[in-house]
Amino acid sequence: MKASAVNRAFGAGWLSLGYVFLYLPIVALVIFSFNDSPVPNAWRGFTLKWYAALADDREMLAGLWLSLKIAFLTACVSIVLGTLAAFALDRYRRFAGRTLFSGMVNAPLVMPEVVVGLSLLLMLVSVQRAIGFPERGMATIWLGHLLLGMAYATVIVQSRLKDLNPQLEEAAMDLGARPWQVFWLVTLPMIAQSLFSAWLLTFTLSLDDVVLSAFLSGPGSTTMPLVIFSRARLGLNPSVNAIATVIVLIVSIGVIAASYAIARAERRRALEMAEATRA
Amino acid sequence: MTTSGRMGSWAKRLRGRTAVIGLPYLWLLAFFLFPFIIVLKISISEMETVQFKDLVAYKDGLLTLTLKLSNYVFITQDPLYLKAYVASLKYAFWTTLLCLAIGYPFAYFMARAKPTTQPALLMLVMLPFWTSFLLRVYAWKGLLTTDGWVADLVIGSGLDQWLVAGGLIPAPGKLMNTPFSLVLGMVYTYLPFMILPLYGNLAKMDLRLLEAAQDLGASPWVAFWTVTVPLSKAGIIAGSMLVFIPCVGEFVIPELLGGPETLMIGRVMWDEFFSNNDWPMASSVAVVMILLILVPLAIFNKYQAEAQEVRR
Image (cartoon, rainbow over all chains, first blue to last red; front, side):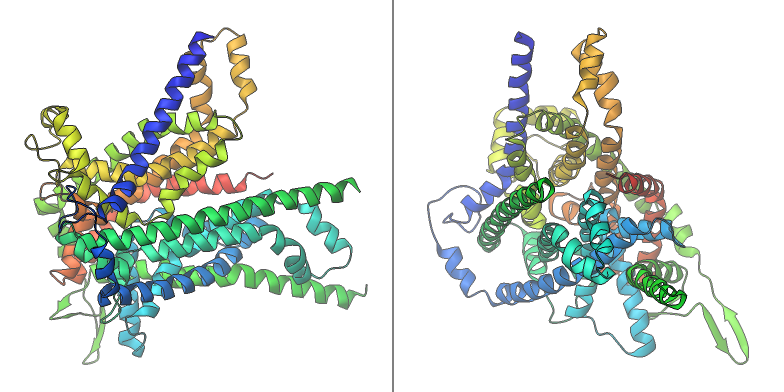
C-alpha cells in the first residue's frame, strides 16, 4: 500500500497548492488594505486611514448604491425568467425552435461580454432613434445584467428540476390539484433552494460586472465596478483594496451563512421525505 | 368529465405552456438574437459624421441600398487586426491547456477525497467565484509589480530567467504587462470554470469500473488513461469551452494585466468603440470574433443540451 500513500500525499499537496493559488490574491488584497503606504505593495505599517477615506469617497459610495440597486433588481427578475426557461426546457421536450431556444439560453454563459454589450447597446440606440426611448442609464444596465443573470439562473434551476421526483407532482395532480397549485405547493418548495442560490449568484454577478455596464451606462450612472476599474487601470490604489476587503468580507459571510442554511434545510427535507415514504 | 370540460382544461394547459415557453423565448429573441442582427447590419453601414446611415434609404422616389464591406476588407488587410485575432486565439488556447493541466488533477483529487470533506472542498472552489472577479484580477497587479509577493518569489528563485528563455517576459525582473502576467491572470480567473464541470463528472463516476480494469490486469496508470479519462470526456469538453470561448474575447484581464505586446481582440474592439467612436468598425470586429468562436460555441451548446437531456 505504499503507492497509495504516495498517491494520497501527492493529492493533498496538489489540492493545497491549488487552494493557495486561488486564495493568495484575496488574502493579499485584504492585508494591503491596512498598509500605511499610498502604493499598496510593500508593507509599511498598519493603518485604517484607507477605510476612513472610503467613508468620504462620494464617487465610490454612489457607485456602490447604484450597483446594489441594479444587482437586487437583476437577481429578482433573473430567477423568474430563469425558472420559466428552465421549465420550458425541462418539461416540454419538443416545441418549435427548441434548439434555437436552448442555444440562446446557454450562449450568454460563454459569449464574450464585449460582444453582448456592444450588440445590446447598438440595438438600444437603434430603438432609441426610432421611438426616443430608452435613455442609457440604470435601466439599460439592468437589462444587460438580466441577460447574463437569466442564463445562470436557468442552468441552476434546470439542474434541480432534472433531479426532482416526478411522482410527487403526479400524486398531487391525481389528488385533484390544479397545475398552478401543483407548482406553488409542490414544485416551488422543492426548487426553493436552487432559486435561492440562483438569486445569490446573479446578485454577485451583477454587482461585479464591468464590461456590460461600461457599454450600457449613461452619464451619471457609474456603477461601483466602473469606478474601481477606472482607478485600477491607472495603477494600484489603496481605496480599491479597502472597498475590496469590505466586499469580500460581506460576500464570504453571506455565502457561507446561506450555504449553511441551505444544507440544513436540505437535511430536514430529506428527513421529512424519508418519514413520508415510510408511513 | 364532459367533452367541453376536457377541451377547456386542455386549452388552459396549452395556454400555460405557451406562456412558459413564450415569455423567455420572446425575451431572448428581442434582447439576445435581435441585437446580433443589428450588429451585423451596422457592420456594413456607412458612417455619417457621428451616426451610421440606414442600409435602405428611400429618397427622390428611389429605394437605395448601401452596403459597405470595406470594414471587412480592412480587417483582413490591416496586420493589427490579424495579429490581435491570432494573439487572442493563442492566449485562449494556452489558458485552456493550463487550466486543464492544473484543474484536472485538482478535480480528480477532490472527487476522490473523503465524502464528508468534499462539500467543504467544493465550497472553497466556489467562494472565490462569488467574490468579485474584477478585484481578484486587480489583486494580481499588486502581487506581480516590483516588490509584490509573487514577483519577489519568482525573481528570488531565479524563475524569471526561465520565463525569459520561454519568451513569456521580455527581460528578467519584469513580470507585469507581459504575456506571463496575462496568461497567469486568465488561468487564475477561469480555473474554477474548469474544475467545477470536471468535478461534477468525476464525482459521479462508477468506481467499480476502475476496479474491474485493475482486476483485468491494468495498472492504475493504464486504468486512469483508458477508463477515467475517456469517461470524463464530457467534463473535459465542457470545462475547456467554458474557458476558451470567453477568453478569446476577454477585455478586463488584458487591460489590467496585459501590455502593449499582448494586444487581444477584445481590447481592439473596445478601442474602436470607445476611443475611435467607429461603431461600424467595432461591429465588424465583433462579427469576425463571433465567427471565430462559432465552432466552439456549437460544441458547447451541443454538450449543454446533452447534459440537460440526461434524466434521473
